[in-house]
Length: 100
Image (cartoon, rainbow, N blue to C red):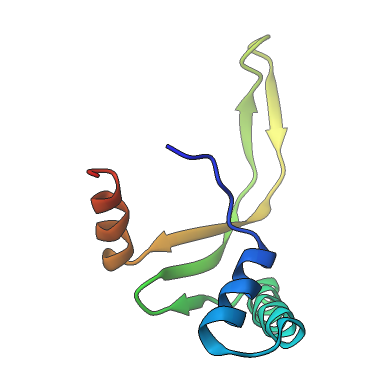
């Protein structure tokens, strides 16, 4: 499996090629979309992209954890975590990619 990472630059290049906007406009569009998504998640809203998946923020309560090295109990503070749940279509597409 290739360890390639899809970057913002890759996304803006794809918009440039597929949509035909200038490179600068494509980069601004990608930044704008990612900004809207980030802002919505920071407000605690879900971001649902059809046929792709849903990003959401989950509240995790305080709990007692354990240091695996020493076995010592350590308090873990409450926090917000970002989660992603892929759509069924995305799950199928990823699974099909593993068979080739």
